[in-house]
Length: 139
Image (tube, rainbow, N blue to C red):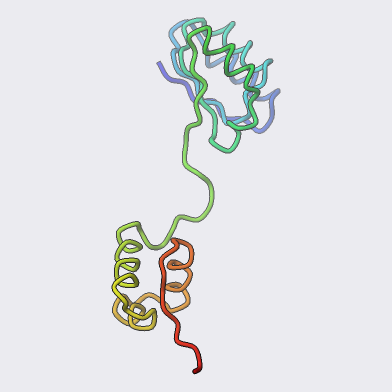
């Protein structure tokens, strides 16, 4: 059984974990950084837990010793969820198309006209992805 517990602070999280966890729980998601105190709290109340997950932004802040100790007990600590921030407007397929046009020698202005993507965005995508585009300077 999977349990998701979200709270604003550690004290609130511990209270919610207390009521949500039992012997049937095998997966736990928490939205705060898993500290030693929180992990002990989880393991005491859900002895059959095999997976504990947290947001990807907090996972790097967890001690390697904690991750290693959990893995020795047969418990995985995993980052889970979607990265924060605004989603990209143009997908990978569009980016590949822009890059292939640029590699075949089509100038950015023409790429912008064909794809109806603003010229500034075309330059940004080509620069970000490392695609070469030719600019004509004054002779």
